[in-house]
Image 1 (cartoon, rainbow, N blue to C red):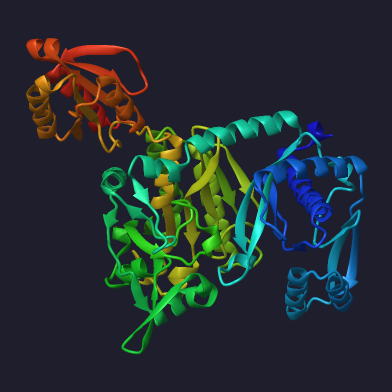
Image 2 (cartoon, rainbow, N blue to C red):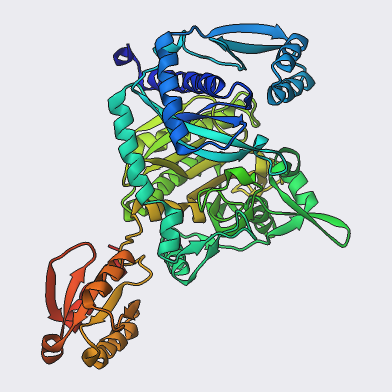
Length: 584
């Protein structure tokens, strides 16, 4: 059946399989713990989860028992029976079952004006659910799913609420797909950026600041190298760097629309009894920079860039290392241009992003999102912008996927989905065309005709959130950064204390040439020190002993390789300096 499906249909079918599997898990839990209170159980990327209020704490062995029960339920081939019932009836039914979390959800639906709710029954289990589901449990591939872990989750993601127990699972079309995914998951665990961040002394997180990462000296080296590279590439493209405050008056956020549409994700303060907000985005501040001067058509396109610190409130249960934080730096740039410049600027942006991603060995695919139903701007504006994006993509000859009606309300966009070393995709870069902000803020430039005209605003990020991009790179490289990004680029290993002075001489030479170098002259065996350097993912290990000192050479061992090579110190310096300069 799946062979005749398009990729989109296959993905949709998998989503239904995963959602149905979450209900089968809930039924298995009901059999194991009849007094369970059920919360929610959605399909998620690659699988599903369900949150339970249980009479005891689950242990890993419970997952094995639950999987067996789930396979028995699949074999029993229970029908997924859907019914629509009145809100009052639903409240009565779930009150009889003692399901307080479902009651709370139904009450919320009632407040929102719903008169009926949808429920699904499979065997003895009834759930409040909008669906869709498979026809029966027997359609779930019995060898295509696995329960993966147990974790805590606050009800509704709010730490003021009760902590529930969440069971995660993955589900695929067949055993082979599942096996491939589990292999990738195993590799991903080895590359976990939180684990590597601690081992490599890059960053840490602390209970005193959940969602606010702390970068250590070695992490700041990687950070600064990423920024230096970013600045170099942007200088080549005639960007001008700006910096805007992180706290700005409420009136600005009201004008931008954030106060109305984004308030629950923002942090606030009062200064002299006046309301201020900590910026969740850089755009409004950048617009004030544009507005602070008069502009001519001769200046356009004007490119203003900022690696700005932003804060967005995230529920504590969603925080995840550098991937999901409350404070991050966004590499925003805003290009103010005329309508007839959109296409050319989009082409330049795609080339810039392509060049930068290739430096990290990251491939990507593009998605073009078009006008949504609720949008601002005229039909002509949207047509001009969408055509410019499409033509730019076609002229550059890159493949892209269209997401109909998935653009921002203020304009269409192109998203870059990068692929890492183990095949996972991450949405990072974005190019957005914006008609709304120039209107809201009454932006203008003086045209060739001497009259005021409204510019078009292009928003774009490349790294996206710097913290998240760094987390992606840690996992992409498994901590083994290329030489130019490595916190320590070389480590000198004297075979004994006798050669410490020669090691120190080489250390000084390398340091003078801006090479990040350390000496490991502890009294431990050379083998132990090499293993420690390997664990620290240092690219070059430079061994020095009697022979090396006599010949004024070093023996080089590259990270992950057993082969050794002896060469003159100057030759090595020339080699590593080229690698650093070229960022190879």
